[in-house]
Amino acid sequence: MPVEVISVDNLSRESIKEALDSDFPNVFVDDDGDVGVRDLCTCYLLPNVEQRRLRLLTLWHFRDEVGELEKYLCANRINVDYAIVRAAVVGPHLAMTYDVSLEGDGISRRSLTLLIKRFCSAALASAMEYGQGLLA
Image (tube, rainbow, N blue to C red; front, side, top):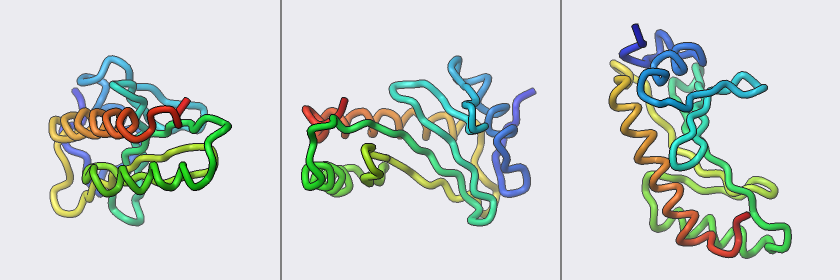
């Protein structure tokens, strides 16, 4: 039976994977032990017990010829127009994140599934809109 609620009390990579296995056919654990989902994009779910939250993360690779200013302008435009994603330049990558607070009762499996789908949709749309010609 899948985990029905992710909360501070059960926050772990194992509980995240167990909660998502029934809703996503492409849940995986990478070589670092991080849980990921392949949906419209690859989304990693990174637990942070100390800060009582779960971070959704997706990474896009900038083309080698893209300059630093272009990278930062891309991230800034995404941050202005897309509330559900926070974009940042991390070396050769455009990282997009969204933090889920687990204070109180946590987040239900169903709500997390819908949030991941919405996050992946917004991440892909913003990458297509502002990363065109910049992302590999």
